[in-house]
Image 1 (cartoon, rainbow, N blue to C red):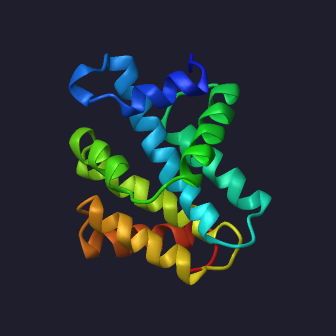
Image 2: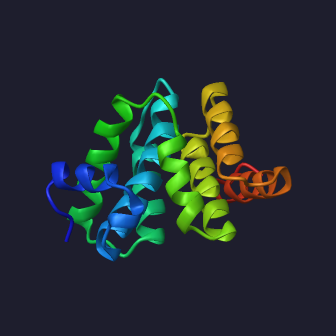
Image 3: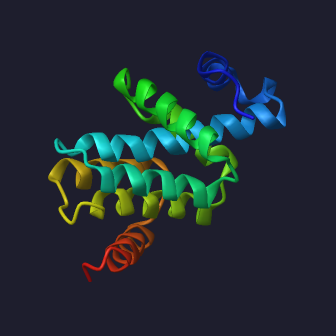
Length: 155
């Protein structure tokens, strides 16, 4: 279902108003994947547990086949390498996601951060920054963090 990586990236770069519903869905999937991958990249020791949690989080949010998930994560990783701000990703999510969906993205970010049983300061800072950009309140942010920590068995 996912097009080639270049086509998907070109779709993301297009204005939301000119996108078809399918292209918009791909844009939102990529935005979510980039934010999750960024948490993984914030920890200097990327391990298989974090990679597995990224895939699980995306699988739970989007109905994608395994090969589509792999390609989405690959594109997110490539996109994240050249990332200089999060605004283009968070603005798409702010425009099209409900508050609950945005909270779930933040919770997914926390799940990635806790996947290796170690919370890095860079991960914490990144999630805090993105939560602010997504207009997630401090209470929602803390609740998402506590749910992810409990899910990781670190409560």
